[in-house]
Length: 237
Image 1 (cartoon, rainbow, N blue to C red):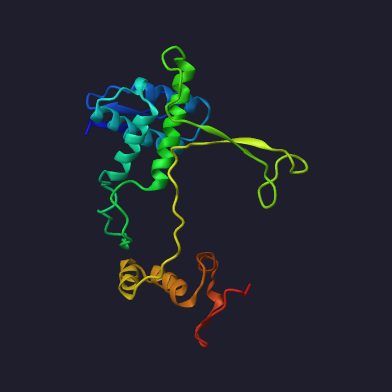
Image 2 (cartoon, rainbow, N blue to C red):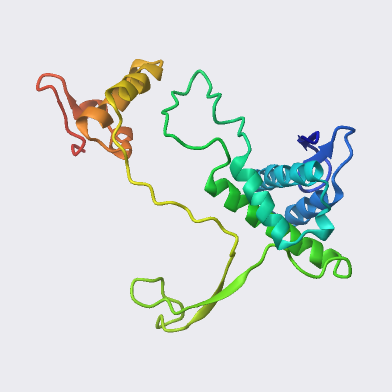
């Protein structure tokens, strides 16, 4: 894999840069990040864009592709690479985290890939803006879809009757709708055992065995707990 990394810098409005092993800045990414920084994007957003484009640039370097000659078919190869490659952040969970095995693949998640495709699309929009003679078309396609926003949809216009065009990315991966799955006794034991304080264990057990929502647990006060009756009443003000 190409030796590229994201570094924090005090120069320029972006605060972040993507550099190679010699410390040379990737000009295309840097110009885009400086553009976003000039538009007052937050530092956290710029950092996320930098890491998303870092993954894309590593793929370009490893496959010998040029960012200026990319096509939609190349983006399909990039999507396949993201789905199949090993994700170093998944298997090695930290000691403070109890990982529940869910059978997911080693590749990047659908949400991550879609977010990176959005970042790549915006990068190319910037390159077209600054180099219109060198790049005429964005390889990440967009299509216009007409929506009327009727019924339960969000209304547009004073009476909610105005149709409007929205853009969709045909390369966007479908996000599966997952149903909630109950934990097994072994998973519950591992989860409770991962907490290091009695406070965290008490909060998790209230949600697990008492059926309280996280917001209800966070809103609990000492007077809500009746030790004599062995009950908790989160409705008490």
